[in-house]
Length: 294
Image 1 (tube, one colour):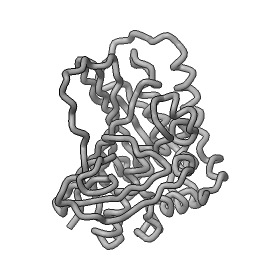
Image 2: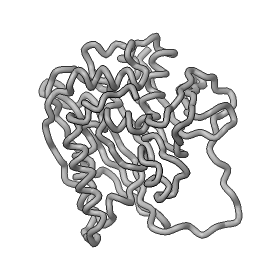
Image 3: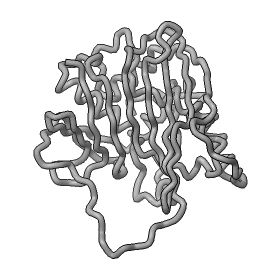
Image 4: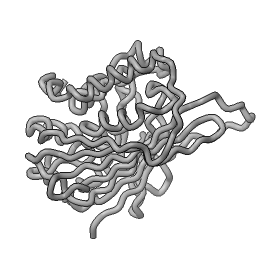
């Protein structure tokens, strides 16, 4: 495994939050009224360690994409997960049932290295449907000089009941024909653990096979934000000549688990659409759009 265990020392807030979520899942639900926008959770976090930033950029394929003075924007879950969990903590549904569906990340200003980060998170939208509840949480990250460098809307769903079978099978999302391949990625058996060491998300479905099977997966799965990082840096490398500052936003959905060990590729269509999957016409794991500065 290429990622050092030493990075776990920088993941205290995320690990503590995961512990609180696990404990809260054992307690009775609190039937509180849901209001949007919800209370804002504000905190300041110290500068991210240079060693962590370098290792994360290398893992995601962005080591040569101009992060000498800035932080890779898709690393936002590393500091954003604790306030996100707190923002969702007063809901009448347990956090253990919340499933990550995707996000929209906008880069308004480059996030500089070596500066304390100001982070805010709040529940911005709740949409109840027949068998599930859709949640949107906003996470804003900045500095004292630029308080809104990154704005991330994180999309999640809480399943309430299994929908009745209609008899019609919905076709799984696939990598659309007409896309072209940008990059191939081999994900070793420890890819989920590596990403956990870099971000603090030690949810066991990503690195403990027996736990993943109990949760209903045939194997461990890569973090959705891991797929996002690979797609982001692939686009920067192959479409934007390694100029990370030109990629201004990405909007994506995680449509199928990425099992590990395994392989995936990143595809684009030249019109601002991208996909992550095995091949053209084959099942996709991530679908999305992106925007660049010309």
